[in-house]
Structure formats: structure tokens, C-alpha cells
Length: 518
Image 1 (cartoon, rainbow, N blue to C red):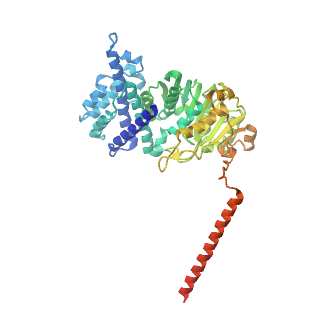
Image 2: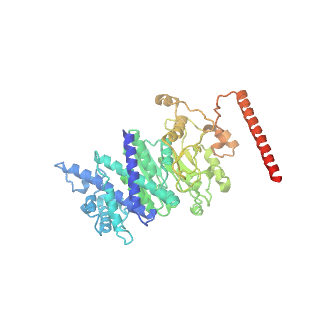
Image 3: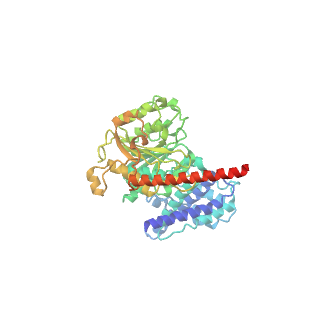
């Protein structure tokens, strides 16, 4: 029943996006994105506020107009002129843009809404924005009605917001990759690391998708939202605003910092030691300012090259891992094999010091921003910790390059079965025998062409290259059950038939040529 409800929500979100997209006229998706997402956010906090307001109104000892009443329940206080009902009543006014800006300003100005300070878009009144379109959007989003409960409505709004972010990422193409990591990739990482509780960190958090998926994972396992603490940083202010709104829509309390210098040069969480790090850093950044960080104490495994930030990200992430922490990082495939500019030596030290737990080769076309295939690095501070099987000195290689299905001409996605095959393989590899029996899991076994557990001795023979295809081998040919003698006779007969047909065709051609000569 729950799955049917989620699918209905997704269908509704898709229809809503199509309707909203028709209204944008000449606006570019990158500009229209903030118009639409800002309104959805306003609708969300208004729904949450109204539900709480109705509840407090029934309590003789509560004041529904007291902002502090809402703070305790993590509900944003919405002033009267910022409430959705007011905007809906004025949707056809030529001043609707001004009213929306005033609503955003009023919400930010409220002391109990301090976490939204400087976050909300406030340029709806600009002359270039069509006010008829704005009014139509307000009417459209007003159709997201309460269903059987206020929680149901807010959950639906969360799904709508999430869908709109992914749809805008697709519409923006390469630029969309700056703020959005495909759900297939995020869910694979989350299902592999299983962040049940503890501190979760993302040093380049984009629109916050890693955190949203982690929260969903906790809820799926029967946990509570506050079982994990969320920390992040984002270099792009506009993207940071998206993240703050996205997390608020999903009810996630998070410490997300913005600084134009970024995590390398102004680390907002210097003392943080996270239990889980989930990150999709920008691929192969060449202008990351490495020449100013040569003596940085984060480079425990070697100074990263000035022309590529891949191994700077890996070392920054390991630096922030707790003694028993685990990390999942998305990187370009070159990180698995490059020997230039000292990258090979850094990778060698990571392997020799047992920081690499698992490598996953992903197929191409998973991302909006690039068609190239990428890989997942699963890193660990202690490969014998957290009640897991002692895998010190070993690395699990998974080759998932042939997995997934095309959802359109240019983009691929993983099914839930694909994600479970990858994540389940890793979990079984890490699980102790007693855990396997408790969960009814089969014991891990190498699968030719898909997965292989290898020790450091073998990896050394490959010069510490971590490309899974070098280790997993070729998939076994299942065969068709036909004996060789029978198959050979059939092939021989078929070949002879082709020879005979060829000879007959040649004779016919020569005959026709002789007629032409006569």
C-alpha cells in the first residue's frame, strides 16, 4: 500500500512539473528553478504551520499566535501576510510578485526562523517576471491539498520538491550536475554504508540529496530523524539556498555552512569527526588552489597534485572520519588508475594503510552533467570495527558497468534490484557469519565478471591500480546445454548451405553478365 502511495506521489509530482514547466515561457530553467522551488517551499512551511496552528487552537492552554509554540516542534512561524491562503487570495493581483517577496522577507525576519536567514528567494517583483505566470503557479501549487492528514500533505510536498530539483537538473544538463546527484548513485551509497545513527557529513553537499536519502534510510529501518546529525558545506550560495530549503521541506535539522572559499580553504567543520561521509565532489577540478595548501595537515597520504583535486577530496574526507568511520565518495574513473603527478603514490599509501574498503565501477550516463562512467570509493578508518567482519588487507571490487536501464536517449538509472545487488554484495562481504544467519543472507562469494575480494599482494602486482575490471575477470558463460558435437554439426550444415547459396548466386551473376556482353 505504501509503495502504491509513493508511486502515486511521483506521478502527481511529474504531472505537476509538466504543468509548471508549460508556464515558464521564455525563462531559462536555471532561472525558473528558483521561482518554482521558492513557491513550493513557501507552500510547505505554510501547510506545516497551519496544521500546527489548528492543533494549538484546540488546546485551551496554548496560544496559536505565539511563535515560541512552533519553535519547540521545529515548525517555522509564518506571519499572517506570508501564509499561503493570503497569497492564494491575491494570486490574480498585479502585485502578486511584491506580496511573495514580502512573505519571504517576513518569514526570514521572524527571530524563531533564524535558520532561514538569507536563504529564501526574494526577487519575484522584478519587472522581467511575468505576474500572470506567477499567479498561475500559485493556483497550481494550491492543488497540493491535504489528503488524510497534515503529515501526508507535507510528505507529498517533500516528494514534489525533490522531483522538481531532479527535473530541473535534467533540464539544465551539465549545470544541473552542480547541485544534483542522481538518486541511483545516492541510494547506492546510502544502502552500502547504512547510516543508522551518528554524524553524517558532506563537504560539497549540493542541494542536500545525500542527507535526504540518509534520513529516508533511517526511517525505513524504523529509526527516528534525530538518530543522525547532519553537517555539510557548499561553495555556491545559490545551491546552498536550495539545500537549506530542501532539508527544511523534508524536516531535517542540519548544520549546513556556506562559504565562497569552499571546504578546502575555509573548512566550516574543522573539528568534526563524522561516522559517515557521503560525497559527490566536482570531478577533476584543476583550479582548486592546491598551491596554497602544500603544507596542509590533511595530506597524510601525499600532497595532491595542483592540477586535480580528486585526491585532495579523498584526504579531506578521511581527515574528517571518526576512528570507526566509513565514507562513500563518487569520483571520476581516472582516480582508480592515474599514475601522474603523484596520484599513484597517494593511492598506493591509501591501499597499504588499509583505507580502501570497496571499489565500484559504475556505468556511463548516470549523471546529468557528464556521460562518462564514474566510480565509488568506499573508505574506512578501521576495517575491523562496528561489529563487522575483519577485512583488513582486503578490498572488494564490484564491476557494475553493465547494470541499469536507459530511461531516455541519454540517461541511465539503477532499479531497486540493481542497487540491492551492489549494496547487498558489499554488506554480505562485510558481515560476520552470525549476522548472515540472523538476516537469512547467503554467505559472500566471488562472482566472475561482477565481484571479487582481493588481498594487497594481488593489488600490488597491478601497481595499486583499483579498476574493478582488472580483478573480477570475465563472467562465466552459462552455455545453452547443447552438446558440442551436435552444435558443430549444425554449424557445419548451416555453413555448407551458405556456401551452396553463394555458388548459386555467383553462377547467376555470371550468366547475367554474359547476356549484357552479347
